[in-house]
Amino acid sequence: MKRLLPIAIFLGLFILLARSLFVPQMDLPSPLIGKQIPSFSLNELGKSSTVTHQDLLGDIALINIWATWCVGCEIEHDFLVELSLDQDLDIPIIGINWKDRDDLATRWLIQKGNPYSKILSDPIGNTAIDFGVYGAPETFLIDDQGIIHYKHIGPMDRQNFEQDILPRIVALRK
Image 1 (cartoon, rainbow, N blue to C red):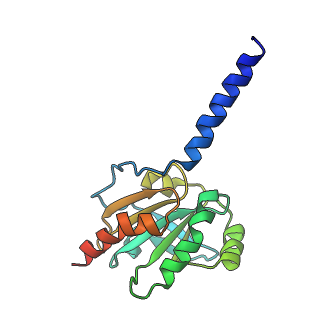
Image 2: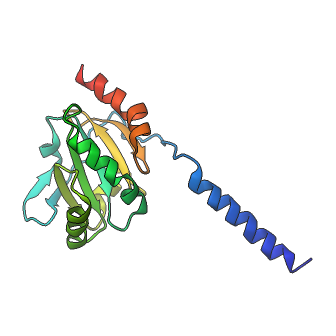
């Protein structure tokens, strides 16, 4: 009986963790909803030019925090490429490459396609911390004044985009 206890505990934990992989991600409230995006100054990926939070004003946009080492980012990437090509939607996607190497990110985008209108590099992760990010991918919907209206945690797909984000985009455009 004593030999079966560790096996039973292991199997119980394994089932609990495996089940969590298939439970839909829930969107946790962000204290930044309704507030201005954090101030930042980041280099564009692979360039010496700098982009600040002020440069993102003027358009309703999605800010996507991603990395090449992120499994969820790979899962959502094809959908982001599809979104970027949707001329009816016409919404810029700003990518913030989080805690990653520029050369790996550049190669990844060449291989998989680039959905981003701007790609910013946050190699240390300070800007992501200011956004309240604790795991990639995370996506923020901002209005033309830089106010955060929604935060999606985890890989985005057509279903959660159409259910949670698109109605907010439509409302912001009115």
